[in-house]
Amino acid sequence: MSSPRPSSSAKVPAHLGETDLSALGALLAEPARAKILLALADGRALAASVLAREAGVAPSTATHHLTRLVQGGMVTAQVRGRHRYFQLAGPHIAELIEAVARVAPTQPVTSLRAGTRAHSIRYARHCYDHLAGRLGVAVSDALERRGLLTRDGDHGVYTVTELGPRVLARLGIGVRAGDTARSCLDWTEQRPHVAGPLGSALLCRLLELEWLVPDPDTRALHISETGRDQLQLLGVELPRP
Image (cartoon, rainbow, N blue to C red; front, side):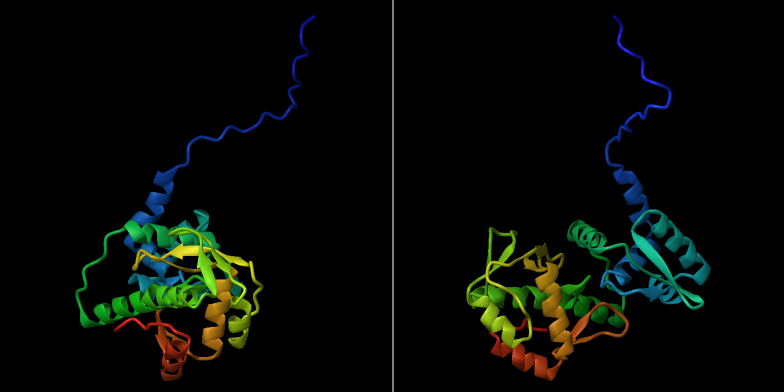
C-alpha cells in the first residue's frame, strides 16, 4: 500500500542557508553608516539631523543611510511629534559594534579636535548601557580586587561575592550574592569590563551621583572632581590622562 501523498496545502518547512555576512558587511562598508552606528552606540535615540552632522553628510543623504540601517535590522525609528528619532535595535547591535571595533583598524587623527575626541572616547564612554573604556576596565578591576566580584576565566561572567551586596548597597546598587553579570571585552583595552544589568545599574548610579558627566556631543564620559575622589576611595586606580 502506498503512502498518502501530502496535500497541496501542507506547509513545507523553510530551509535556511549560511549566514550572509556580506549583507552585514555592505551595511558597515559605507563610512557614513559606520559613523551613524558609532554615534548611536551609547543607546541614545538621536534625531536624523544630529546623525547627519555626526556622519558629515547632508540630511537627505543621512535619511537614505538610516533607511538602509532600519531595513537591515540594525536601527529602529520612532516618531516624536514632527521628528523621527533613531536608536540601535538593541544591545546585541552594540555588542556587534564593539566586536567589530576590536578587529578594525583605527583611523588616522588629522586634527586636534579629532585627537581630543578619540582620547575621551577611549578613556571613558557609554558601551550602550554600561561603562567602558580605560575607566570601565579600571572600575571592574577594582571590584574584583576588593573581592566584590569574581570572574570565571579571562573573559567569563562576573559573580557577586558574599561581600559584594553590602559594599554595593552603599552606592545604592541592590544585588545578591551569587548574582552574575556578563563581561564585555573592551575594544580599546582588549580586556573585560562589567556589562549586563549590573553594569547598567553601576553606570546609572555613577551618573546619578554626578561622579561621571556625559559629553553633550559624543558617547564619552568625563569624571567630575567629586567622582575622581570617590572612585579612588573605592579603590579604583584611575587611568592616567
